[in-house]
Length: 553
Image 1: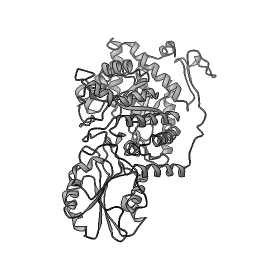
Image 2: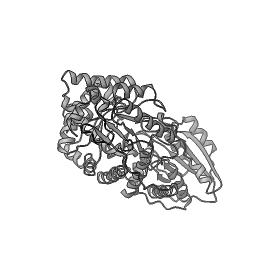
Image 3: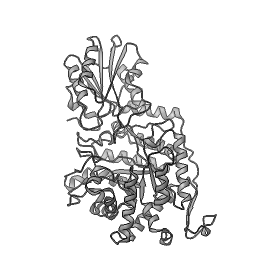
Image 4: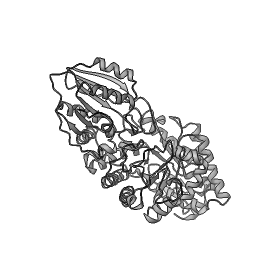
């Protein structure tokens, strides 16, 4: 890429290309029109709020690219957080609900991770999404971590590295950029950086052996992008500065020491760990100064505009060297040339007469259409793979003779429904409960559904409905660091009178907060394939082989 091609862009266009922004509509609304047309943003991120169906997302991607082309800008990079398991922005028919990281970690088989990334990568590419903000490479070794948890492959750095490298290979083999996150590591934290600042206090030797190892492996695997963490690392940056804003972390460690030459993207600057102490606009400048290429501002139009304008002004006043902007833009343009191939789009100078039709303009950049990927798989084949992975991920931690279920006795299932959205948890639109799945295999199944935050009165009502003859299955669900108080109360009261089968539907650490149950099963997620496999495990028709990827201590 020659600099005279970059020089054809105005300063506003160059800075705009360094921003990835979200918007609130299921069509190209005024917010995203303005961001692309007036501020030249180079990337868009999708959330659940943008998704009505797969066909709608495909049309939206096409419309957004058309807006960028009409504005004379480069093709957009369109991204999504589709990690798998319990964190997925698209839960509609046409995009596979692949297993999450901890479920894959429990299988001990990175080939499954590769296969899931290939399936998902191909599906995302087909609807105009060319960057997945995955995989999570945080090593989850803190039982109270409220934001990573099952988004991690586990607590063993080597295992995380192996699964992460497999995911990167899978996504990128299908033309979708993988994004390793959250550098230098968000696994050993007990605070959610969406809500506040957090520090990882370990010495450098420990960081090299644990937190940094998966990122070294990701770089070796050729990962396209690495996302920063809003976390303080005193062993690397002696000042109390989060990694996202630290030149010692992004340039000194990631670029110079570790040799990463791809795109450095920030986590969203509207997260409170950044926005509260610095403000989004000032943080955007500091992130660019630190060495970030792509600035993520996911939600608020005013924050997005103020951040872009702040960086433009910082260049004009000399605070940010123009060469820094050009270096970031070179990386972004190189990525777009390699990854945005489904749109035939030529960028030339703003003087349209300079364009040529055969892609041979010496001052332009041609993005040509790639050949169609012929590796599509049937839905039946994909479902078979998901069932196989689920059966190899479910983990029986303890069995005090309650498994399999006695076919002569009734079953009482307590099932928590996810109804509230959080930053790391969203309700699925099509997940059957365990009671439904078990009822398809045997008679005598009753089910009581609760929320993930049941009241004590609700728990006491359940106690009245249970009988001595019932085989009781209590499913727990924790998306934060602690089991919700209502669920804790329910399990404690039931365990005082009955032997229980407790199923941790998400967080395996639930066992640490409840009385020791008669039997304990970890599923790491409540996706359809897992619920089907769990029902077979409970009835004895399937022998699970999953192993805990974390320690329950």
